[in-house]
Structures are given as structure tokens and as C-alpha cells.
Image (cartoon, rainbow, N blue to C red; front, side, top):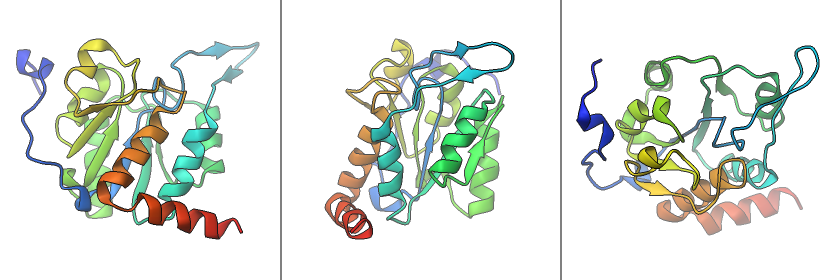
Length: 187
């Protein structure tokens, strides 16, 4: 697909069909983490994940919303984090996130109007332009932040994903019900 200057502008979308949101997709580096990479000796790579985001995923699991993470890079730390959080749909080393999401939507029998997506950089833009709702952390690339539907007040790796989760659950009208279901599940 060839992009022109229109790719740099916010797409004109219809109103978000909040009740139709059934899949929330997150980028990793710059969204679930602060985007920094810490390399140790040998192949050790460390990432910082925020506990607030993790609990947000647990809240989502009390709803019918499916969670996915699509990352342009591969990381054992991300794989472990998703396993710890029971996130089934993890895709790593993805060069074309739009094609990856298209395949996932076919597998899940969903369409783009069922998707909310959070990303922070240019490799997320093709997806952001097709989904029902696009979001970015507070520290996303400035030109990318200009074209999304909503920008979190939190930075990547510092609760931005949780902020989006809370926002979507609130817009769907199920935030309180979801929190109560979570509280019931932990005693």
C-alpha cells in the first residue's frame, strides 16, 4: 500500500460503536513499556511493565473483550508477561501489524469496527486508521498522537494501557460492573 500525506492526518471516522468493541489490541514497546531496552550480558533483555496495566488486563478478562498484543520486536520478557496475564493472542516480530490484525480478525470472526487499538509510533498508524477506536500514550510520537482518537494522560509503561482500558469500559457502560466482578473473584 502506498501512503501519501493523508496518512499523516486523522482519518474521518463515524462515531465509535462502543457496544461493538470486542477486541483490544496493544503495542508493546512504548505502550506496555516505556520503550527503553535494557541489554545485559549475553542475550539478556529487560523490560519494565506496570502493575496497573496488568490489573487492567485482569479487569478485561471479566468481560467478553478479547486481549491481544502485537509487537514489532520479539522479547522473552513480553512472552512471559503475557503468559503471566493469560493473554493468548500475542504476536511478536511483526513487520506488518495490519496484516497480523487482519488474520486475527478472520480467526475470531470479527471486523475492524470491533477493535480498539493503542500504539505509539508510525508502525501502528495503518492499524489505527482502520479500527473503531485508536489511542496513544501521553509520550507517543507527537505526529502519531495527532491522528488518534484519544491520548492517555499516562506515558507508555506507566499506566497508559490501564487508562485506555478504564476509558473503554466506561464508554461501554460496564466499568463498575467489571470492577465488582473482579472484586468478587478475589474474595
